[in-house]
Amino acid sequence: MDVQTCNGSVHDFSLYKQTCPDWLPKNTSYLADSGYQGIAKLHDQTFIPFKKPKGGELLALCKQANQYLAKCRILVEHKIGLIKLFKIVAERYRNRRQRYDLRMKLFAGLVNLELNI
Image (tube, rainbow, N blue to C red; front, side, top):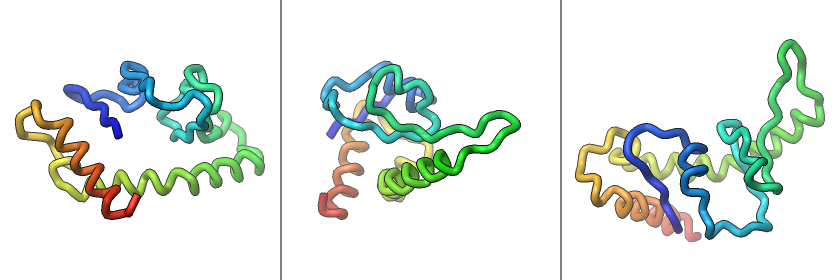
């Protein structure tokens, strides 16, 4: 398990591009939310939601694909919510920066242990 952190406020995709994890398998599919526009340039097997065109509507097939993607990603969103039950994660971090990464790994490990993963 690897946790990437940085000082200050940084968008998730910017942090991902900076660190670009080498341990992720190359032949794996990635399910991302709409905040990761452009990740397909880094990975071939990437799925992000379809965006509605300006002044238009999404095709029924695109809506179904977005619903399926959301059903798959909801598990990840629920895990993030469980980690945020620890108030130290959900609010501004006021302790020493030196132990921040260790604490984030501990909280993620506790959530995974509770879910028997």
